[in-house]
Length: 209
Ligand SMILES: Nc1ncnc2c1ncn2[C@@H]1O[C@H](COP(=O)(O)OP(=O)(O)OP(=O)(O)O)[C@@H](O)[C@H]1O
Ligand SMILES: Cc1cn([C@H]2C[C@H](O)[C@@H](COP(=O)(O)O)O2)c(=O)[nH]c1=O
Image 1 (cartoon, rainbow, N blue to C red):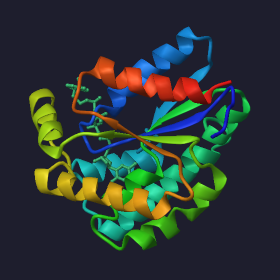
Image 2: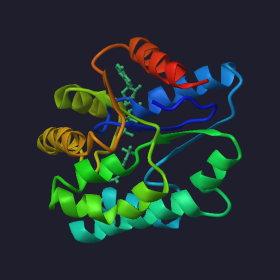
Image 3: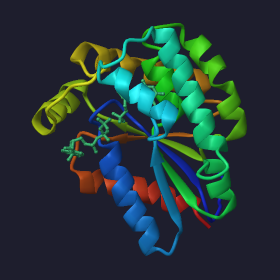
Image 4: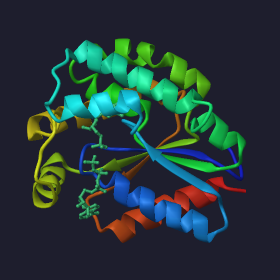
Protein backbone atom coordinates (compact mmCIF):
# COMPACT_ATOMS: atom_id res chain seq x y z
CA UNK A 1 0.00 0.00 0.00
CA UNK A 2 1.23 3.50 -0.90
CA UNK A 3 1.91 6.06 1.82
CA UNK A 4 1.65 9.56 0.34
CA UNK A 5 0.65 13.02 1.33
CA UNK A 6 -1.95 13.42 -1.39
CA UNK A 7 -4.10 10.53 -2.53
CA UNK A 8 -6.42 9.80 -5.42
CA UNK A 9 -9.57 8.26 -3.90
CA UNK A 10 -12.56 6.94 -5.85
CA UNK A 11 -15.89 6.38 -4.09
CA UNK A 12 -18.10 3.78 -5.71
CA UNK A 13 -21.52 2.30 -5.11
CA UNK A 14 -25.00 1.92 -6.54
CA UNK A 15 -27.29 4.96 -6.77
CA UNK A 16 -28.28 6.23 -3.33
CA UNK A 17 -25.48 4.35 -1.56
CA UNK A 18 -24.28 7.57 0.09
CA UNK A 19 -21.30 8.55 -2.08
CA UNK A 20 -22.06 12.28 -2.05
CA UNK A 21 -22.63 12.20 1.72
CA UNK A 22 -19.33 10.39 2.31
CA UNK A 23 -17.44 12.61 -0.16
CA UNK A 24 -18.53 15.61 1.90
CA UNK A 25 -17.62 14.02 5.25
CA UNK A 26 -14.21 12.82 3.99
CA UNK A 27 -13.49 16.23 2.48
CA UNK A 28 -14.22 17.85 5.87
CA UNK A 29 -11.98 15.35 7.72
CA UNK A 30 -9.07 15.83 5.34
CA UNK A 31 -9.44 19.61 5.27
CA UNK A 32 -9.49 19.71 9.09
CA UNK A 33 -6.20 17.77 9.03
CA UNK A 34 -4.67 20.44 6.78
CA UNK A 35 -4.92 18.66 3.41
CA UNK A 36 -5.76 20.47 0.20
CA UNK A 37 -8.80 18.60 -1.18
CA UNK A 38 -10.38 18.64 -4.64
CA UNK A 39 -13.66 16.74 -4.68
CA UNK A 40 -15.33 16.03 -7.96
CA UNK A 41 -17.78 13.62 -9.64
CA UNK A 42 -18.77 11.76 -12.78
CA UNK A 43 -20.65 12.30 -14.95
CA UNK A 44 -19.09 15.78 -14.83
CA UNK A 45 -20.77 19.15 -15.22
CA UNK A 46 -18.81 19.80 -18.39
CA UNK A 47 -20.09 19.49 -21.97
CA UNK A 48 -19.99 15.72 -22.35
CA UNK A 49 -21.22 15.18 -18.79
CA UNK A 50 -24.21 17.45 -19.43
CA UNK A 51 -25.17 15.39 -22.47
CA UNK A 52 -24.93 12.22 -20.37
CA UNK A 53 -27.19 13.73 -17.67
CA UNK A 54 -29.71 14.63 -20.36
CA UNK A 55 -29.76 10.98 -21.44
CA UNK A 56 -30.07 9.76 -17.82
CA UNK A 57 -33.08 12.05 -17.32
CA UNK A 58 -34.71 10.56 -20.44
CA UNK A 59 -34.62 13.85 -22.41
CA UNK A 60 -32.29 12.45 -25.10
CA UNK A 61 -32.34 8.87 -26.36
CA UNK A 62 -29.06 6.98 -26.93
CA UNK A 63 -27.99 3.39 -27.50
CA UNK A 64 -26.12 1.75 -24.56
CA UNK A 65 -22.93 1.57 -26.67
CA UNK A 66 -23.06 5.32 -27.23
CA UNK A 67 -23.64 5.93 -23.51
CA UNK A 68 -20.57 3.77 -22.73
CA UNK A 69 -18.49 5.81 -25.19
CA UNK A 70 -19.70 9.11 -23.74
CA UNK A 71 -18.62 8.04 -20.24
CA UNK A 72 -15.17 7.15 -21.62
CA UNK A 73 -14.87 10.59 -23.28
CA UNK A 74 -16.19 12.48 -20.22
CA UNK A 75 -13.66 10.62 -18.05
CA UNK A 76 -10.70 11.40 -20.30
CA UNK A 77 -11.60 15.09 -20.30
CA UNK A 78 -11.98 14.92 -16.51
CA UNK A 79 -8.46 13.50 -16.25
CA UNK A 80 -6.64 15.50 -18.88
CA UNK A 81 -8.30 18.92 -19.14
CA UNK A 82 -5.61 21.56 -18.79
CA UNK A 83 -7.77 23.76 -16.56
CA UNK A 84 -9.61 21.40 -14.18
CA UNK A 85 -8.12 17.97 -15.00
CA UNK A 86 -7.40 15.58 -12.14
CA UNK A 87 -3.87 14.91 -13.36
CA UNK A 88 -3.16 18.63 -12.87
CA UNK A 89 -4.89 18.75 -9.47
CA UNK A 90 -2.83 15.83 -8.15
CA UNK A 91 0.39 17.44 -9.45
CA UNK A 92 -0.60 20.61 -7.53
CA UNK A 93 -0.73 18.56 -4.32
CA UNK A 94 -4.48 18.14 -3.93
CA UNK A 95 -5.95 14.96 -2.54
CA UNK A 96 -8.62 14.16 -5.12
CA UNK A 97 -11.90 12.53 -4.09
CA UNK A 98 -13.94 11.25 -7.02
CA UNK A 99 -17.63 10.44 -6.63
CA UNK A 100 -17.54 7.60 -9.26
CA UNK A 101 -14.77 6.61 -11.66
CA UNK A 102 -14.23 3.75 -14.09
CA UNK A 103 -15.65 1.02 -11.82
CA UNK A 104 -19.02 2.76 -12.32
CA UNK A 105 -18.71 2.09 -16.05
CA UNK A 106 -17.69 -1.53 -15.44
CA UNK A 107 -20.76 -2.04 -13.25
CA UNK A 108 -23.44 0.08 -14.99
CA UNK A 109 -22.41 -0.36 -18.63
CA UNK A 110 -21.27 -3.93 -17.85
CA UNK A 111 -24.88 -4.59 -16.84
CA UNK A 112 -25.92 -4.07 -20.48
CA UNK A 113 -22.92 -5.25 -22.52
CA UNK A 114 -19.82 -7.37 -22.25
CA UNK A 115 -17.95 -6.22 -19.14
CA UNK A 116 -14.56 -7.03 -20.71
CA UNK A 117 -15.35 -4.66 -23.58
CA UNK A 118 -16.13 -1.90 -21.05
CA UNK A 119 -12.86 -2.56 -19.20
CA UNK A 120 -10.97 -2.37 -22.51
CA UNK A 121 -12.74 0.85 -23.49
CA UNK A 122 -11.55 2.41 -20.21
CA UNK A 123 -7.97 1.12 -20.46
CA UNK A 124 -6.66 4.57 -21.41
CA UNK A 125 -8.07 6.14 -18.21
CA UNK A 126 -6.74 3.26 -16.09
CA UNK A 127 -3.29 3.70 -17.61
CA UNK A 128 -3.34 7.46 -16.91
CA UNK A 129 -4.54 7.28 -13.30
CA UNK A 130 -5.50 4.38 -11.08
CA UNK A 131 -7.02 5.35 -7.73
CA UNK A 132 -4.84 4.70 -4.69
CA UNK A 133 -8.01 3.19 -3.28
CA UNK A 134 -11.49 2.42 -4.66
CA UNK A 135 -13.89 2.68 -1.73
CA UNK A 136 -17.06 0.66 -2.36
CA UNK A 137 -20.02 1.69 -0.22
CA UNK A 138 -22.00 -1.52 -0.22
CA UNK A 139 -25.72 -0.94 0.28
CA UNK A 140 -28.62 -3.31 -0.26
CA UNK A 141 -30.45 -2.19 -3.45
CA UNK A 142 -33.77 -2.22 -1.52
CA UNK A 143 -32.36 0.32 0.96
CA UNK A 144 -30.88 2.58 -1.72
CA UNK A 145 -34.21 2.58 -3.61
CA UNK A 146 -36.02 3.58 -0.39
CA UNK A 147 -33.55 6.45 0.08
CA UNK A 148 -33.94 7.63 -3.52
CA UNK A 149 -37.75 7.59 -3.34
CA UNK A 150 -37.76 9.38 0.03
CA UNK A 151 -35.44 12.17 -1.10
CA UNK A 152 -35.99 12.74 -4.82
CA UNK A 153 -38.86 13.75 -7.13
CA UNK A 154 -37.37 12.13 -10.24
CA UNK A 155 -35.90 8.69 -10.87
CA UNK A 156 -33.21 8.34 -13.56
CA UNK A 157 -32.52 5.76 -16.28
CA UNK A 158 -30.60 3.19 -14.20
CA UNK A 159 -32.51 3.64 -10.93
CA UNK A 160 -34.81 0.61 -10.78
CA UNK A 161 -34.56 -2.13 -8.15
CA UNK A 162 -33.84 -4.85 -10.72
CA UNK A 163 -31.14 -2.79 -12.44
CA UNK A 164 -29.44 -1.83 -9.15
CA UNK A 165 -29.36 -5.51 -8.13
CA UNK A 166 -27.68 -6.30 -11.45
CA UNK A 167 -25.28 -3.34 -11.11
CA UNK A 168 -24.27 -4.46 -7.61
CA UNK A 169 -23.50 -7.95 -8.94
CA UNK A 170 -21.44 -6.39 -11.77
CA UNK A 171 -19.41 -4.38 -9.24
CA UNK A 172 -18.61 -7.69 -7.53
CA UNK A 173 -17.69 -9.29 -10.85
CA UNK A 174 -15.39 -6.37 -11.76
CA UNK A 175 -13.72 -6.40 -8.31
CA UNK A 176 -13.04 -10.12 -8.68
CA UNK A 177 -11.63 -9.71 -12.20
CA UNK A 178 -9.37 -6.78 -11.30
CA UNK A 179 -8.36 -7.61 -7.72
CA UNK A 180 -4.72 -8.06 -8.82
CA UNK A 181 -4.53 -4.54 -10.32
CA UNK A 182 -6.81 -2.45 -8.13
CA UNK A 183 -6.97 -1.66 -4.44
CA UNK A 184 -10.57 -2.09 -3.32
CA UNK A 185 -11.90 -1.33 0.15
CA UNK A 186 -15.50 -2.32 0.77
CA UNK A 187 -17.49 -0.73 3.58
CA UNK A 188 -20.93 -1.69 4.93
CA UNK A 189 -23.14 1.21 3.78
CA UNK A 190 -26.32 -0.05 5.49
CA UNK A 191 -25.43 1.90 8.66
CA UNK A 192 -25.45 5.52 9.81
CA UNK A 193 -23.41 8.04 7.80
CA UNK A 194 -21.15 8.60 10.86
CA UNK A 195 -20.25 4.91 11.25
CA UNK A 196 -19.49 4.61 7.53
CA UNK A 197 -17.41 7.80 7.62
CA UNK A 198 -15.46 6.44 10.62
CA UNK A 199 -14.42 3.31 8.67
CA UNK A 200 -13.52 5.32 5.58
CA UNK A 201 -11.46 7.75 7.61
CA UNK A 202 -9.53 4.93 9.33
CA UNK A 203 -8.64 3.46 5.93
CA UNK A 204 -7.63 6.80 4.37
CA UNK A 205 -5.64 7.91 7.43
CA UNK A 206 -3.72 4.62 7.33
CA UNK A 207 -2.62 5.41 3.76
CA UNK A 208 -1.37 8.93 4.46
CA UNK A 209 2.16 9.73 5.56
N1 LIG B 1 -25.94 6.06 5.72
C1 LIG B 1 -27.09 6.63 5.37
N2 LIG B 1 -28.23 6.29 5.99
C2 LIG B 1 -29.43 6.84 5.64
N3 LIG B 1 -29.58 7.77 4.64
C3 LIG B 1 -28.47 8.14 3.99
C4 LIG B 1 -27.17 7.60 4.31
N4 LIG B 1 -26.26 8.16 3.48
C5 LIG B 1 -26.94 9.00 2.68
N5 LIG B 1 -28.26 9.01 2.99
C6 LIG B 1 -29.34 9.76 2.32
O1 LIG B 1 -29.68 9.01 1.15
C7 LIG B 1 -29.82 9.90 0.03
C8 LIG B 1 -28.77 9.52 -1.03
O2 LIG B 1 -27.49 9.83 -0.48
P1 LIG B 1 -26.31 10.39 -1.37
O3 LIG B 1 -26.82 11.50 -2.24
O4 LIG B 1 -25.17 10.68 -0.49
O5 LIG B 1 -26.03 9.09 -2.25
P2 LIG B 1 -25.31 8.96 -3.63
O6 LIG B 1 -24.69 7.62 -3.64
O7 LIG B 1 -24.41 10.11 -3.88
O8 LIG B 1 -26.55 9.00 -4.61
P3 LIG B 1 -26.58 9.12 -6.21
O9 LIG B 1 -25.82 7.96 -6.74
O10 LIG B 1 -28.03 9.02 -6.53
O11 LIG B 1 -25.98 10.46 -6.56
C9 LIG B 1 -29.65 11.31 0.56
O12 LIG B 1 -30.92 11.86 0.84
C10 LIG B 1 -28.87 11.13 1.86
O13 LIG B 1 -29.16 12.12 2.81
C1 LIG C 1 -19.67 7.54 -13.83
C2 LIG C 1 -20.79 6.69 -14.33
C3 LIG C 1 -22.07 6.87 -13.88
N1 LIG C 1 -23.07 6.10 -14.34
C4 LIG C 1 -24.44 6.30 -13.86
C5 LIG C 1 -24.68 5.94 -12.42
C6 LIG C 1 -25.83 6.82 -12.02
O1 LIG C 1 -27.04 6.13 -12.33
C7 LIG C 1 -25.72 8.01 -12.94
C8 LIG C 1 -25.33 9.32 -12.35
O2 LIG C 1 -24.52 9.20 -11.26
P1 LIG C 1 -24.94 9.85 -9.82
O3 LIG C 1 -23.85 9.42 -8.93
O4 LIG C 1 -26.27 9.27 -9.46
O5 LIG C 1 -25.02 11.34 -10.00
O6 LIG C 1 -24.74 7.65 -13.93
C9 LIG C 1 -22.83 5.15 -15.32
O7 LIG C 1 -23.75 4.46 -15.79
N2 LIG C 1 -21.55 4.95 -15.76
C10 LIG C 1 -20.52 5.69 -15.31
O8 LIG C 1 -19.35 5.48 -15.75
